[in-house]
Length: 473
Image (cartoon, rainbow, N blue to C red; front, side, top):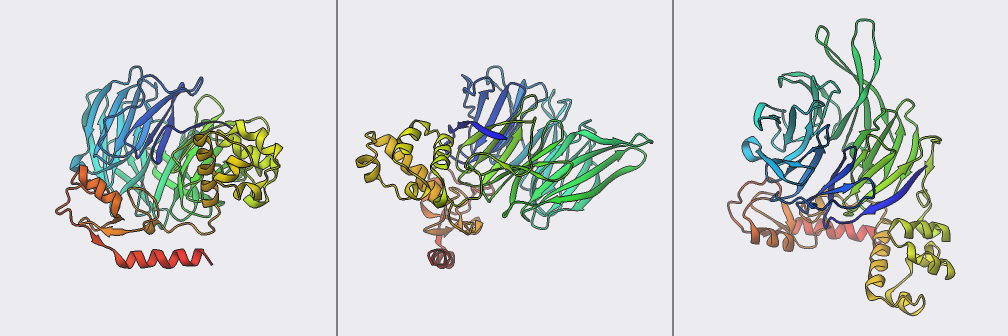
Protein backbone atom coordinates (compact mmCIF):
# COMPACT_ATOMS: atom_id res chain seq x y z
CA UNK A 1 0.00 0.00 0.00
CA UNK A 2 0.96 3.65 -0.50
CA UNK A 3 -0.73 5.92 2.03
CA UNK A 4 -0.89 9.70 1.78
CA UNK A 5 0.34 10.92 5.17
CA UNK A 6 0.98 14.63 4.63
CA UNK A 7 0.46 17.43 2.10
CA UNK A 8 2.71 20.49 1.87
CA UNK A 9 0.95 23.52 0.38
CA UNK A 10 3.30 26.41 1.13
CA UNK A 11 4.33 27.31 -2.43
CA UNK A 12 2.10 29.80 -4.23
CA UNK A 13 2.96 28.55 -7.73
CA UNK A 14 3.84 25.32 -9.57
CA UNK A 15 6.14 22.93 -7.70
CA UNK A 16 8.99 22.06 -10.08
CA UNK A 17 11.15 19.68 -8.08
CA UNK A 18 11.58 17.92 -4.75
CA UNK A 19 14.63 16.19 -3.26
CA UNK A 20 15.43 14.26 -0.09
CA UNK A 21 18.45 14.13 2.17
CA UNK A 22 18.62 11.70 5.07
CA UNK A 23 16.85 14.20 7.33
CA UNK A 24 15.20 16.83 5.12
CA UNK A 25 12.97 17.38 2.10
CA UNK A 26 13.56 20.34 -0.21
CA UNK A 27 11.04 21.66 -2.73
CA UNK A 28 11.31 24.44 -5.31
CA UNK A 29 8.82 26.35 -7.38
CA UNK A 30 7.95 28.87 -10.03
CA UNK A 31 7.42 31.24 -7.09
CA UNK A 32 11.26 31.71 -7.00
CA UNK A 33 11.69 30.02 -3.61
CA UNK A 34 13.13 26.82 -2.16
CA UNK A 35 11.49 25.41 0.96
CA UNK A 36 13.12 22.93 3.34
CA UNK A 37 11.27 20.62 5.75
CA UNK A 38 12.29 18.26 8.53
CA UNK A 39 11.42 14.61 7.88
CA UNK A 40 10.72 14.05 11.56
CA UNK A 41 7.48 16.06 11.53
CA UNK A 42 7.40 17.77 8.09
CA UNK A 43 7.70 21.16 9.76
CA UNK A 44 9.37 23.86 7.70
CA UNK A 45 12.84 24.74 8.97
CA UNK A 46 13.29 28.19 10.57
CA UNK A 47 15.39 29.59 7.72
CA UNK A 48 12.97 28.44 5.03
CA UNK A 49 11.96 29.65 2.48
CA UNK A 50 15.29 30.27 0.78
CA UNK A 51 15.04 33.36 -1.38
CA UNK A 52 17.57 34.85 -3.76
CA UNK A 53 16.74 33.62 -7.24
CA UNK A 54 15.29 36.30 -9.50
CA UNK A 55 13.06 33.93 -11.47
CA UNK A 56 11.55 30.44 -11.27
CA UNK A 57 13.57 27.71 -9.54
CA UNK A 58 13.60 24.59 -11.72
CA UNK A 59 15.58 22.06 -9.72
CA UNK A 60 17.19 21.44 -6.33
CA UNK A 61 19.38 18.68 -4.90
CA UNK A 62 21.29 17.84 -1.72
CA UNK A 63 24.96 16.99 -1.54
CA UNK A 64 25.60 13.38 -0.39
CA UNK A 65 26.28 14.59 3.16
CA UNK A 66 23.10 16.67 3.17
CA UNK A 67 25.04 19.72 4.38
CA UNK A 68 24.74 21.63 1.10
CA UNK A 69 21.67 22.24 -1.03
CA UNK A 70 21.95 23.34 -4.66
CA UNK A 71 19.23 25.10 -6.65
CA UNK A 72 19.09 26.36 -10.22
CA UNK A 73 16.87 28.87 -11.96
CA UNK A 74 15.67 30.68 -15.05
CA UNK A 75 17.88 33.54 -13.83
CA UNK A 76 20.88 31.66 -15.24
CA UNK A 77 22.46 30.73 -11.91
CA UNK A 78 23.00 27.77 -9.63
CA UNK A 79 23.11 28.63 -5.93
CA UNK A 80 24.68 26.63 -3.08
CA UNK A 81 23.07 26.89 0.37
CA UNK A 82 24.21 25.73 3.81
CA UNK A 83 21.44 23.47 5.13
CA UNK A 84 22.39 24.14 8.74
CA UNK A 85 21.43 27.81 8.71
CA UNK A 86 20.20 28.61 5.19
CA UNK A 87 23.25 30.75 4.46
CA UNK A 88 24.01 31.30 0.75
CA UNK A 89 27.45 29.87 0.04
CA UNK A 90 27.92 30.68 -3.64
CA UNK A 91 26.17 31.91 -6.77
CA UNK A 92 27.44 30.10 -9.87
CA UNK A 93 26.62 31.88 -13.13
CA UNK A 94 26.01 29.64 -16.14
CA UNK A 95 28.17 30.60 -19.17
CA UNK A 96 25.92 32.54 -21.53
CA UNK A 97 23.46 33.25 -18.68
CA UNK A 98 21.02 30.70 -20.12
CA UNK A 99 18.21 29.44 -17.85
CA UNK A 100 19.52 26.49 -15.80
CA UNK A 101 17.08 23.58 -15.91
CA UNK A 102 18.73 20.84 -13.87
CA UNK A 103 21.53 20.33 -11.33
CA UNK A 104 23.14 17.30 -9.61
CA UNK A 105 25.97 16.67 -7.19
CA UNK A 106 28.49 13.97 -8.04
CA UNK A 107 28.46 11.03 -5.55
CA UNK A 108 31.58 12.30 -3.80
CA UNK A 109 30.26 15.90 -3.88
CA UNK A 110 33.40 17.05 -5.70
CA UNK A 111 31.36 18.55 -8.54
CA UNK A 112 27.99 20.11 -9.23
CA UNK A 113 26.60 19.45 -12.69
CA UNK A 114 24.39 22.19 -14.15
CA UNK A 115 22.53 21.94 -17.47
CA UNK A 116 20.84 24.82 -19.26
CA UNK A 117 18.27 25.71 -21.89
CA UNK A 118 20.95 26.52 -24.47
CA UNK A 119 22.34 22.97 -24.19
CA UNK A 120 25.34 23.96 -22.09
CA UNK A 121 26.63 21.44 -19.53
CA UNK A 122 28.91 22.68 -16.74
CA UNK A 123 30.84 20.89 -14.01
CA UNK A 124 31.54 23.21 -11.07
CA UNK A 125 34.28 22.39 -8.55
CA UNK A 126 32.35 22.55 -5.29
CA UNK A 127 35.39 23.20 -3.12
CA UNK A 128 36.79 26.10 -5.13
CA UNK A 129 33.41 27.24 -6.53
CA UNK A 130 35.12 27.52 -9.92
CA UNK A 131 34.14 26.17 -13.33
CA UNK A 132 35.94 22.85 -13.89
CA UNK A 133 34.71 21.70 -17.32
CA UNK A 134 32.01 22.66 -19.78
CA UNK A 135 30.39 21.13 -22.84
CA UNK A 136 27.25 21.35 -24.92
CA UNK A 137 24.61 18.98 -26.28
CA UNK A 138 23.57 19.25 -29.88
CA UNK A 139 20.26 20.63 -31.05
CA UNK A 140 18.25 21.09 -27.90
CA UNK A 141 17.91 22.24 -24.30
CA UNK A 142 19.40 20.12 -21.54
CA UNK A 143 16.48 18.79 -19.52
CA UNK A 144 17.84 15.91 -17.43
CA UNK A 145 21.03 14.49 -15.93
CA UNK A 146 22.20 11.71 -13.63
CA UNK A 147 25.59 10.56 -12.29
CA UNK A 148 26.77 6.97 -12.23
CA UNK A 149 27.15 5.65 -8.65
CA UNK A 150 30.94 5.80 -8.86
CA UNK A 151 30.90 9.32 -10.29
CA UNK A 152 33.12 8.43 -13.24
CA UNK A 153 30.48 9.33 -15.80
CA UNK A 154 27.11 11.01 -16.12
CA UNK A 155 24.17 10.99 -18.51
CA UNK A 156 22.29 13.97 -19.91
CA UNK A 157 18.92 14.09 -21.65
CA UNK A 158 17.86 16.81 -24.06
CA UNK A 159 14.70 18.26 -25.56
CA UNK A 160 15.78 16.81 -28.90
CA UNK A 161 15.31 13.32 -27.43
CA UNK A 162 18.97 12.34 -27.03
CA UNK A 163 20.62 10.56 -24.11
CA UNK A 164 24.34 11.37 -23.98
CA UNK A 165 26.94 9.67 -21.80
CA UNK A 166 29.93 11.76 -20.68
CA UNK A 167 32.99 11.01 -18.60
CA UNK A 168 34.18 13.24 -15.78
CA UNK A 169 36.55 15.00 -18.18
CA UNK A 170 33.47 16.19 -20.12
CA UNK A 171 34.21 13.93 -23.09
CA UNK A 172 31.15 12.71 -24.98
CA UNK A 173 31.35 8.91 -25.01
CA UNK A 174 28.01 7.79 -26.43
CA UNK A 175 24.79 9.25 -27.82
CA UNK A 176 21.41 7.57 -28.26
CA UNK A 177 18.12 8.84 -29.70
CA UNK A 178 15.85 7.72 -26.86
CA UNK A 179 12.55 9.62 -26.93
CA UNK A 180 11.17 11.03 -30.16
CA UNK A 181 9.59 14.13 -28.63
CA UNK A 182 12.25 14.93 -26.04
CA UNK A 183 13.70 13.58 -22.79
CA UNK A 184 12.22 15.10 -19.63
CA UNK A 185 14.04 13.19 -16.86
CA UNK A 186 16.50 10.36 -16.23
CA UNK A 187 17.86 8.50 -13.22
CA UNK A 188 20.50 5.82 -12.62
CA UNK A 189 20.06 3.15 -9.96
CA UNK A 190 22.79 3.10 -7.33
CA UNK A 191 22.88 -0.70 -7.35
CA UNK A 192 24.73 -2.56 -10.14
CA UNK A 193 22.67 -5.20 -11.90
CA UNK A 194 25.53 -7.67 -12.15
CA UNK A 195 29.28 -8.07 -12.22
CA UNK A 196 30.59 -9.98 -15.19
CA UNK A 197 33.75 -12.06 -15.08
CA UNK A 198 35.81 -9.26 -16.56
CA UNK A 199 34.83 -6.91 -13.76
CA UNK A 200 32.39 -4.73 -15.74
CA UNK A 201 29.45 -3.26 -13.88
CA UNK A 202 26.02 -2.84 -15.42
CA UNK A 203 23.82 -0.09 -14.08
CA UNK A 204 20.13 0.36 -14.72
CA UNK A 205 18.94 3.69 -16.02
CA UNK A 206 15.40 4.99 -16.46
CA UNK A 207 14.45 7.78 -18.84
CA UNK A 208 11.10 9.36 -19.62
CA UNK A 209 9.82 11.78 -22.19
CA UNK A 210 7.15 13.60 -24.09
CA UNK A 211 6.27 10.34 -25.90
CA UNK A 212 4.37 9.09 -22.77
CA UNK A 213 6.98 6.36 -22.13
CA UNK A 214 9.43 5.33 -19.43
CA UNK A 215 12.33 3.34 -20.86
CA UNK A 216 14.73 1.13 -18.94
CA UNK A 217 18.34 0.81 -20.09
CA UNK A 218 21.46 -1.09 -19.10
CA UNK A 219 24.71 0.88 -19.07
CA UNK A 220 28.04 -0.90 -19.24
CA UNK A 221 31.02 1.24 -18.33
CA UNK A 222 34.61 -0.04 -18.36
CA UNK A 223 37.89 1.64 -19.23
CA UNK A 224 38.93 -1.09 -21.63
CA UNK A 225 35.55 -1.78 -23.22
CA UNK A 226 34.22 1.76 -23.42
CA UNK A 227 30.55 2.58 -22.88
CA UNK A 228 27.58 0.57 -24.02
CA UNK A 229 23.92 1.53 -23.65
CA UNK A 230 21.44 -1.29 -24.14
CA UNK A 231 17.67 -0.85 -24.31
CA UNK A 232 15.90 -3.17 -21.86
CA UNK A 233 12.16 -2.45 -21.97
CA UNK A 234 9.44 0.21 -21.97
CA UNK A 235 7.08 0.76 -19.05
CA UNK A 236 3.60 1.79 -20.16
CA UNK A 237 0.77 3.11 -18.07
CA UNK A 238 0.69 6.85 -18.55
CA UNK A 239 -1.62 8.42 -21.12
CA UNK A 240 0.31 11.68 -21.48
CA UNK A 241 3.92 12.96 -21.40
CA UNK A 242 5.93 11.67 -18.45
CA UNK A 243 7.71 14.53 -16.67
CA UNK A 244 9.61 12.72 -13.89
CA UNK A 245 11.06 9.34 -12.95
CA UNK A 246 13.24 8.05 -10.11
CA UNK A 247 14.59 4.79 -8.68
CA UNK A 248 14.07 3.79 -5.07
CA UNK A 249 17.24 3.63 -2.97
CA UNK A 250 17.48 -0.16 -3.37
CA UNK A 251 16.70 0.00 -7.10
CA UNK A 252 13.70 -2.32 -6.77
CA UNK A 253 11.08 0.29 -7.65
CA UNK A 254 10.66 3.10 -10.16
CA UNK A 255 8.24 5.99 -9.71
CA UNK A 256 7.00 8.28 -12.46
CA UNK A 257 4.82 11.38 -12.68
CA UNK A 258 2.91 12.61 -15.70
CA UNK A 259 0.81 15.25 -17.40
CA UNK A 260 -2.08 12.79 -16.89
CA UNK A 261 -1.89 13.85 -13.17
CA UNK A 262 -1.03 10.31 -12.06
CA UNK A 263 1.94 8.85 -10.21
CA UNK A 264 2.79 5.23 -11.00
CA UNK A 265 5.14 3.01 -8.98
CA UNK A 266 6.58 0.04 -10.90
CA UNK A 267 8.49 -3.03 -9.79
CA UNK A 268 11.83 -2.73 -11.59
CA UNK A 269 12.47 -6.45 -12.12
CA UNK A 270 9.11 -7.24 -13.73
CA UNK A 271 7.80 -3.86 -14.93
CA UNK A 272 4.54 -4.57 -13.09
CA UNK A 273 2.54 -1.68 -11.67
CA UNK A 274 2.54 -1.72 -7.87
CA UNK A 275 0.60 1.46 -7.15
CA UNK A 276 -1.24 4.15 -9.09
CA UNK A 277 -1.69 7.40 -7.20
CA UNK A 278 -4.02 10.06 -8.55
CA UNK A 279 -4.45 12.63 -5.82
CA UNK A 280 -2.85 15.55 -7.69
CA UNK A 281 -5.24 17.78 -9.61
CA UNK A 282 -2.71 19.05 -12.17
CA UNK A 283 0.42 17.83 -13.95
CA UNK A 284 2.82 15.85 -11.74
CA UNK A 285 6.22 17.45 -12.28
CA UNK A 286 8.49 15.67 -9.81
CA UNK A 287 8.79 12.55 -7.67
CA UNK A 288 11.50 11.26 -5.33
CA UNK A 289 12.08 8.38 -2.92
CA UNK A 290 13.65 9.08 0.46
CA UNK A 291 17.07 7.41 0.88
CA UNK A 292 16.63 5.81 4.30
CA UNK A 293 12.90 5.63 4.96
CA UNK A 294 9.84 4.28 3.11
CA UNK A 295 8.72 7.74 1.99
CA UNK A 296 7.85 9.09 -1.43
CA UNK A 297 7.35 12.76 -2.33
CA UNK A 298 5.41 13.92 -5.40
CA UNK A 299 5.04 17.52 -6.55
CA UNK A 300 2.69 19.11 -9.00
CA UNK A 301 1.49 22.20 -10.82
CA UNK A 302 -1.35 22.16 -8.29
CA UNK A 303 1.20 23.85 -5.95
CA UNK A 304 1.30 20.93 -3.50
CA UNK A 305 3.77 18.24 -2.49
CA UNK A 306 2.27 14.96 -1.28
CA UNK A 307 4.21 12.73 1.13
CA UNK A 308 3.42 9.02 0.86
CA UNK A 309 4.23 6.21 3.29
CA UNK A 310 5.05 2.98 1.46
CA UNK A 311 4.35 -0.45 2.87
CA UNK A 312 7.33 -2.34 1.46
CA UNK A 313 6.48 -5.66 3.09
CA UNK A 314 3.54 -6.67 0.96
CA UNK A 315 3.51 -4.91 -2.39
CA UNK A 316 0.72 -6.11 -4.60
CA UNK A 317 0.44 -5.53 -8.32
CA UNK A 318 -2.38 -3.19 -9.10
CA UNK A 319 -2.68 -1.79 -5.57
CA UNK A 320 -4.04 1.73 -5.32
CA UNK A 321 -4.65 3.95 -2.35
CA UNK A 322 -8.17 4.71 -1.24
CA UNK A 323 -9.94 6.92 -3.76
CA UNK A 324 -7.21 6.16 -6.29
CA UNK A 325 -9.05 3.73 -8.50
CA UNK A 326 -10.23 4.63 -11.94
CA UNK A 327 -13.86 4.87 -10.74
CA UNK A 328 -15.51 7.98 -12.18
CA UNK A 329 -15.90 10.74 -9.61
CA UNK A 330 -19.66 10.82 -9.99
CA UNK A 331 -19.67 7.11 -9.04
CA UNK A 332 -17.66 7.59 -5.82
CA UNK A 333 -19.07 6.07 -2.67
CA UNK A 334 -19.34 7.97 0.61
CA UNK A 335 -16.09 6.31 1.69
CA UNK A 336 -14.37 7.54 -1.50
CA UNK A 337 -15.51 11.06 -0.68
CA UNK A 338 -14.17 10.68 2.86
CA UNK A 339 -10.78 9.57 1.53
CA UNK A 340 -10.73 12.55 -0.85
CA UNK A 341 -11.52 14.96 2.02
CA UNK A 342 -8.61 13.57 4.04
CA UNK A 343 -6.26 13.95 1.07
CA UNK A 344 -7.27 17.60 0.69
CA UNK A 345 -6.62 18.38 4.39
CA UNK A 346 -10.38 18.57 4.97
CA UNK A 347 -10.63 15.62 7.35
CA UNK A 348 -12.67 17.68 9.84
CA UNK A 349 -15.61 17.49 7.40
CA UNK A 350 -15.68 13.68 7.06
CA UNK A 351 -18.31 13.23 9.77
CA UNK A 352 -20.49 16.05 8.41
CA UNK A 353 -20.37 14.70 4.86
CA UNK A 354 -21.13 11.14 6.00
CA UNK A 355 -24.06 12.33 8.13
CA UNK A 356 -25.50 13.99 5.01
CA UNK A 357 -24.76 10.96 2.77
CA UNK A 358 -22.52 12.93 0.39
CA UNK A 359 -21.34 10.60 -2.39
CA UNK A 360 -19.51 11.54 -5.59
CA UNK A 361 -22.59 12.82 -7.41
CA UNK A 362 -23.69 14.92 -4.43
CA UNK A 363 -20.14 16.24 -4.00
CA UNK A 364 -19.98 17.57 -7.55
CA UNK A 365 -23.35 19.30 -7.10
CA UNK A 366 -22.41 21.19 -3.93
CA UNK A 367 -22.65 25.00 -4.09
CA UNK A 368 -21.83 27.82 -1.69
CA UNK A 369 -25.55 27.98 -0.84
CA UNK A 370 -25.83 24.26 -0.03
CA UNK A 371 -22.64 24.36 2.03
CA UNK A 372 -24.03 27.23 4.07
CA UNK A 373 -27.73 26.36 4.28
CA UNK A 374 -27.82 22.56 4.18
CA UNK A 375 -24.46 21.50 5.61
CA UNK A 376 -24.37 24.52 7.96
CA UNK A 377 -20.69 25.38 7.35
CA UNK A 378 -20.69 28.84 8.92
CA UNK A 379 -17.12 29.93 8.13
CA UNK A 380 -16.86 31.74 4.79
CA UNK A 381 -13.19 30.81 4.57
CA UNK A 382 -13.89 27.10 5.03
CA UNK A 383 -16.75 27.17 2.52
CA UNK A 384 -14.44 28.83 0.00
CA UNK A 385 -11.74 26.23 0.60
CA UNK A 386 -14.16 23.34 0.09
CA UNK A 387 -15.57 24.93 -3.08
CA UNK A 388 -12.08 25.50 -4.46
CA UNK A 389 -11.19 21.84 -3.95
CA UNK A 390 -14.46 20.74 -5.57
CA UNK A 391 -13.78 23.00 -8.55
CA UNK A 392 -10.32 21.47 -8.92
CA UNK A 393 -11.98 18.05 -8.85
CA UNK A 394 -14.41 19.09 -11.59
CA UNK A 395 -11.45 20.20 -13.72
CA UNK A 396 -9.97 16.70 -13.54
CA UNK A 397 -13.07 15.40 -15.31
CA UNK A 398 -12.14 17.10 -18.59
CA UNK A 399 -11.63 14.14 -20.91
CA UNK A 400 -8.90 15.69 -23.04
CA UNK A 401 -5.81 17.38 -21.62
CA UNK A 402 -5.44 21.03 -22.55
CA UNK A 403 -2.91 21.31 -25.42
CA UNK A 404 0.31 22.74 -24.03
CA UNK A 405 0.41 25.50 -26.66
CA UNK A 406 -2.88 26.85 -25.22
CA UNK A 407 -1.31 27.36 -21.78
CA UNK A 408 0.41 30.60 -20.83
CA UNK A 409 4.10 29.85 -20.09
CA UNK A 410 3.95 32.16 -17.06
CA UNK A 411 0.72 31.04 -15.36
CA UNK A 412 0.38 27.59 -16.98
CA UNK A 413 -3.34 28.36 -17.30
CA UNK A 414 -5.52 28.30 -20.42
CA UNK A 415 -5.10 31.63 -22.20
CA UNK A 416 -8.08 33.95 -22.64
CA UNK A 417 -6.33 36.89 -24.32
CA UNK A 418 -3.09 35.57 -25.89
CA UNK A 419 -0.49 38.05 -27.10
CA UNK A 420 2.85 37.62 -28.87
CA UNK A 421 5.89 39.22 -27.28
CA UNK A 422 9.03 40.21 -29.18
CA UNK A 423 10.72 36.97 -28.06
CA UNK A 424 8.30 35.13 -30.39
CA UNK A 425 6.35 33.37 -27.60
CA UNK A 426 2.67 33.80 -26.76
CA UNK A 427 1.47 34.70 -23.26
CA UNK A 428 -1.72 35.66 -21.45
CA UNK A 429 -1.88 39.46 -21.78
CA UNK A 430 -2.39 40.26 -18.10
CA UNK A 431 0.39 37.88 -17.00
CA UNK A 432 2.86 39.29 -19.51
CA UNK A 433 1.96 42.89 -18.67
CA UNK A 434 2.62 42.14 -15.01
CA UNK A 435 5.89 40.46 -15.97
CA UNK A 436 7.28 43.35 -18.02
CA UNK A 437 6.18 45.89 -15.44
CA UNK A 438 8.95 44.53 -13.21
CA UNK A 439 11.56 43.34 -15.73
CA UNK A 440 12.53 43.62 -19.39
CA UNK A 441 13.56 40.04 -20.11
CA UNK A 442 11.81 37.10 -21.74
CA UNK A 443 10.13 34.64 -19.34
CA UNK A 444 11.17 31.81 -21.67
CA UNK A 445 14.75 32.69 -22.59
CA UNK A 446 15.76 35.15 -19.85
CA UNK A 447 17.22 37.32 -22.63
CA UNK A 448 16.45 41.07 -22.92
CA UNK A 449 13.29 41.99 -24.82
CA UNK A 450 14.08 44.38 -27.67
CA UNK A 451 10.62 45.92 -27.30
CA UNK A 452 7.79 45.71 -24.78
CA UNK A 453 5.15 45.70 -27.52
CA UNK A 454 2.53 42.94 -27.21
CA UNK A 455 0.64 41.89 -30.35
CA UNK A 456 -2.74 40.12 -30.10
CA UNK A 457 -2.47 36.49 -31.26
CA UNK A 458 -5.90 36.21 -32.90
CA UNK A 459 -5.10 32.91 -34.61
CA UNK A 460 -4.27 31.26 -31.27
CA UNK A 461 -7.33 32.80 -29.62
CA UNK A 462 -9.59 31.35 -32.34
CA UNK A 463 -7.93 27.93 -31.96
CA UNK A 464 -8.53 27.99 -28.19
CA UNK A 465 -12.17 28.99 -28.73
CA UNK A 466 -12.71 26.11 -31.18
CA UNK A 467 -11.10 23.66 -28.75
CA UNK A 468 -13.31 24.86 -25.89
CA UNK A 469 -16.41 24.35 -28.07
CA UNK A 470 -15.42 20.74 -28.71
CA UNK A 471 -15.09 20.15 -24.95
CA UNK A 472 -18.61 21.41 -24.31
CA UNK A 473 -20.27 19.01 -26.73
